Amino acid sequence: MALLGYMHCLGLGVVKNLDTAHAYFASSALQDDAMGHNGLGFIYFHGTSGVQQDHAAAYKHFNASAYGGSADGMFNLASLYLTGSGVTQSFQRSALWYTQALDRGHTPAAYTLAVMHLNGVGTVRNCKMAVDLLKKVCERGSWVSNKLREAHDLQREGRNEAAAWLFLRLAEAGHEVAQMNVAHLLDTGAAQFLQAPSAQNASGGNASLHQDEVRAAGRIHAQRHYELSAEQGNALAELRLGDFAYYGWGLSLDDGPEDLDDDLSEVSSELKLVRQEADLELAVAHYRRTAAMRITGQWMQLCGGAQTTRAMKRIYNIIMFALLAVGFAGDIPDARVPKEVAAGDSVVEAAEVLAALDAEVKAAAAKEA
Image (cartoon, rainbow, N blue to C red):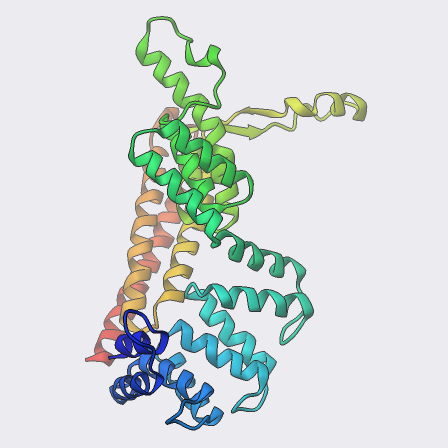
């Protein structure tokens, strides 16, 4: 019903007729549909030939739509609070509802929030937050979307080198998804365009050794983009960095001898990157951050109760397997497990969390029954 209302409201495939749209929206709202409430709020906000403009009624329906989970409803409710239309003006509530809409992928909400953070309206002035939000808006623009689509099409056609080159251009501009994609192509050896010709032709006729060297060189380039992607909150990139630390792939910083004087340290500063050794403590840290990212993401998308707790339990199950792997490695003499790594304690901690989550699932399910 609500979708039919939107078609008549916007003139999509039919003659634009707001009165007909109003009838569909009203029928949908009677069933407490969030989209229907949002459409009805739009009709009351603007008014039609048959419906008088009523901002108070618009507020009522936008509020119902927002609490029903509609991102558009949240955005429209925030706009009413921002302008004081049909409700007492409140910049703080406006910022709150714009944030809720943004969490559900609403691009106009990202732009409006950026302007609010830039000017300190309804929130503390935060230029960094404003820049981050404007970056999100730019990344969702048509030019970036078209380039991403082009790169994905090239990858589907098996033209991985060309796809990786396009992903790299976007990655260097700060696009998080592109950073993850180019890292994956370099990590798996599907793209080798960043490697020197000497590296690609090394190892003579030993194909297996050559492939290992290609993968190792690719991972060095991939690591940087995994790190950039993880800094922007990509849980899969964080998980992969844990694998890099666990297996000793990629590079790490080497501070060098401490007794060097300042002048000599400056000269040798570019030589501080060395091949990374297996570091189980660092791997556990990455895995824990992955768990935190995934649980936070699930919590933001779900609405509490047994469903939310089950999602958290599922993520902790994944992380516990990673910690168990570290614990098993601790039993291998050549694994060089640092003494500071309490892998066993980490497994016990994860098991305790899982037990607590099990109890929460049962309690929440009992309340819902």
